[in-house]
Length: 315
Ligand code: NDP
Image 1 (tube, protein in one colour):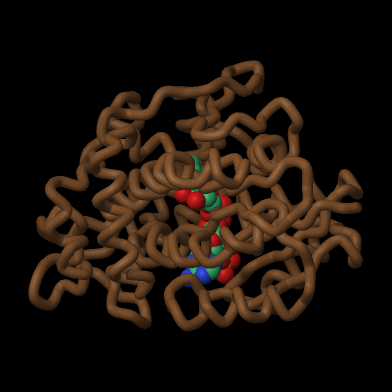
Image 2 (cartoon, rainbow, N blue to C red):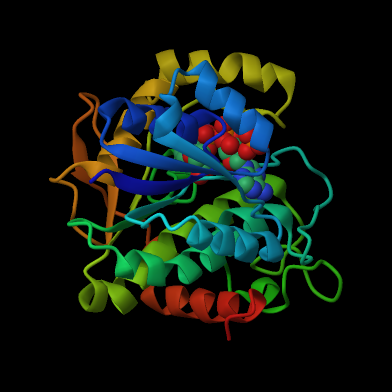
């Protein structure tokens, strides 16, 4: 049978390119979990995905109710779940003030980490029930949250500190909207959220890999300088960033190429190892990359997991 994969944020950028790459193989049915139904339908059509290769389902990661409703709707569809890809993200590099999810969490950590954390926890059961030979949970990471790299050292650097802001619920009311409890910084909030993504992948691996056989992986797909992720940035940045990445850092990848990379992590028989953070070299060959000290701190991972459980109502 065909595999079934859920991809969050499949209406643009990396998520859409991955959906397209998997659809083209004829071996996958793609559930596009998106906040804007019409945009997702149009996006699938615009890249020429075969009509019977995908289903659009509504998911707004900025609302825990919506996450629970999505899981309910997905189960009612009676599709199996073989692979889940947590891909959606927002980035507010120029925001001066924090904005918040329906549940009152700062938006970038709320969507990128907490919404996905609840989704992945709820769908773990469904993944576990699948009889697919290679079940996977993929959480898209990034180099920017990784302070052992050049890109990860561009200030403001990711740093979760002692997690006091997260413990306080990131509401910005009694405490801070930032995980480390410091003043709000939109670029840093994004990087912190990506560190959480990579920590959670490893914590899932430690807690569930042996028992379930599910592979838990993360990846850095390359710098896809043309996606909507940079839509909130100043116009000059949006103009200069793609050529800068192409010609100076040479880290640039096209959306199509990045989609092929994530599609490999979803389906390639040689990429089944669990607990791994995948990257690609200049020749587009995959390799197991090293995470920064903070992004591989097991004690921090456990704490983020437990605090996040409380915030999303699982504990
Ligand atoms: P895009 O902005 O193009 O795509 C992000 C997707 O997330 C969009 O489909 C967007 O939906 C969706 N989304 C945003 N908020 C929500 C929400 N509340 N609920 C559901 N979906 C939502 O960015 P990219 O493709 O670049 O980013 C994809 C992933 O790749 C992210 O995890 C990012 O961190 C990662 N990444 C990107 C890099 C890059 O250079 N671009 C580098 C490294 C990692 P909508 O279409 O409705 O806006």
